[in-house]
Amino acid sequence: MYQPKPIDTSGIALPEELLALTEQIAENVHDIWALGRIREGWRCGPVRDDAAKTTPCLAPYGDLPDSEKEYDRRTAMETLRLILKLGYRIEKG
Image (tube, helix red, strand yellow):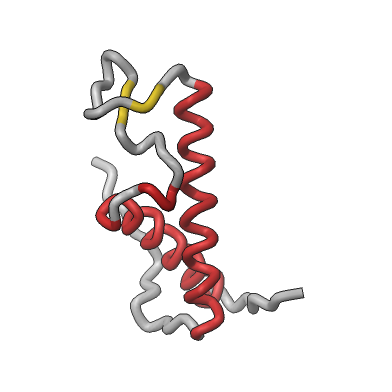
């Protein structure tokens, strides 16, 4: 049975400048997800219906409720923490 073993990033604190980057990454993650769904034939609808390929989440990131945005934010934050944990530096060019 598959047992996920993510790298522990709990000790990594993100600097303030990366917290702002988190929201930009989260929005981009959502846009990539949405583009993939649209290409698969999904469309915006009032409820998620896998058979009909509808979901209310096919909306601009800014229009999503915070509960939906939080998934993308966690993905972005964990990605940034992992990059730092692995010894890389993130610098704005």
